[in-house]
Image 1 (cartoon, each protein chain N blue to C red):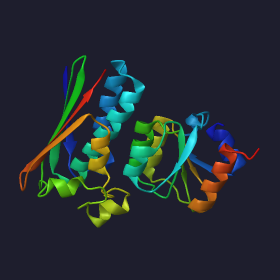
Image 2: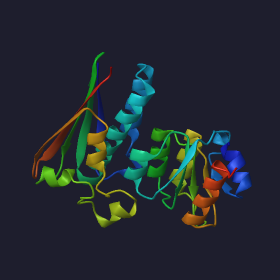
Image 3: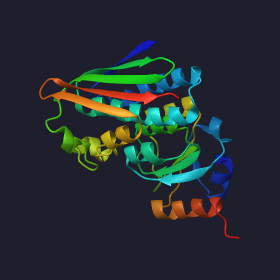
Image 4: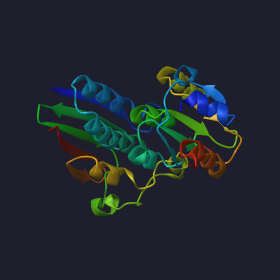
Length: 137
Length: 113
């Protein structure tokens, strides 16, 4: 099964809507609550990253009996140094975004902790693709 | 303890989401960093914060928190309150500062023998 959700850069009032949809879906599919909790953390952080940094994006969710694969592709500034971006506490978020309580440099580390495999591909000035795979069993 | 009992014991005002006052509180979390709450708060927790914007409701809903407590007399923004009503997750407010209200909630949830 495959689902796509559009993400809107800069629109914080919609941040979390796609994650919420996927959460409902996982519940319907009887995925274990513990697993849903992990996946939802990773999804929300990925969604907020698009809202905070990119212009637009798509959250693509594919799953079968064994795994859930979430691919978030955005058009945006890209990440010049992925190693640096992965460091806990490192953030390039704007002061406005930080005031809201985002941009603490915890997003990517939270994603890594809450999926089984995280991969990031990015091209500066073009965009970023984040792929997260989690085994359901 | 339910959200209603907590609000009565600590004299918290109920801003919105009254339909969720029977939610059971299973712990607490105090933080103003959204990713911190997202990553670490437990289901059923009451969340103490000074953030009032709509995203706190997205987190409360995704994490299935019991309620949010705003400190220093802060009130939720209009769209935050609307979302609280939708999700039936109450937002409460106290005139106390974060340290004090967190201590009081902790004492209620972990009474001395």
